[in-house]
Image (cartoon, rainbow, N blue to C red; front, side):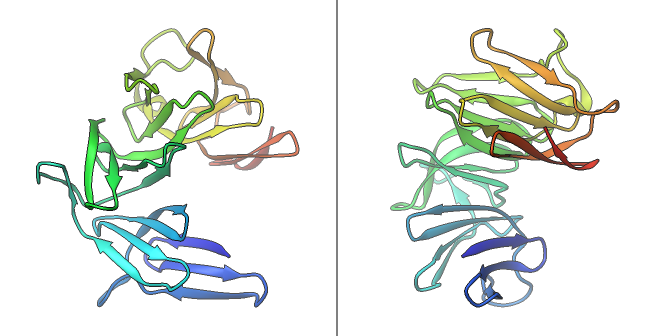
Length: 231
């Protein structure tokens, strides 16, 4: 099944064998949730929303549990929006909110390892070195090593601290050769692990905003403000 999120239409899935779309009711009443993030962990689909918390859908029974407000280990309210969710190889469920990134614990429904990034989180991924990468909407890129050390990146290839659109990081992707690609509002960048730095990848005369990155048969496919590009 192909799971599809939408802004005002909530959640649905496409069944290829039936060639049909089926909605999954998230809201008990009123308008459907604005869905912005999906992450499948076993039989549980974690669904991040705007201002309506996070839903956990059992993909076998379609039962839905809602966590309306994100709460820290000491009972403090953190947020109620999630635009990025990632389950790492250690089975930690990382959730990016409008202000922080944190680990969600299903057994207690509380959050730990809270890291404030100050702006909405657009994407989260773990690379081949077990380093966590966090893309933000206006505050650059963050990484967390497997030892738990955080680092903040605002320099994308020009030797100076980036400003404006360059700080808007939309997407992250690691290919089969362990190369990390970073899609920003000011083009595509490639990470050099040895130098711990980023270099721009020339796409067009005017660099488009790169919204998503995927690889097929050795080519990168990019969804951008200039349409679909193959690199």
